[in-house]
Image (cartoon, rainbow, N blue to C red; front, side, top):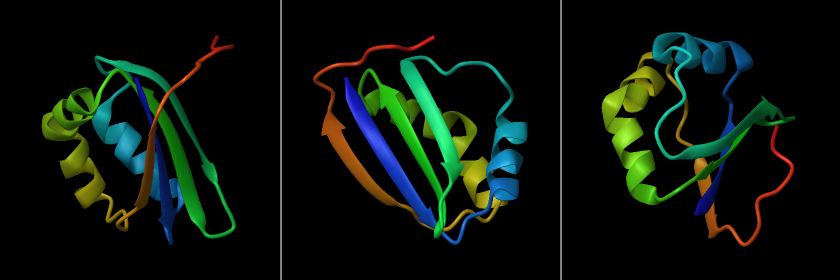
Length: 89
């Protein structure tokens, strides 16, 4: 299981919402958590996935196109293996 943190300077919550509207509300296969919020520099998204392959499949299934359509800037990505995941809904 991996965690990815996307730091997206210059991005807005309006752009984030546009991406979500384009994707719909169905939970992608292999995702455990998705957290997003505004920062003083843009937005930050934190996700926990089963594997990088699950992320790639989701990107290919429409996320990449939705990000491009919303003109989301390139993020800085931090990735690490999850040691513990607790306290989710």
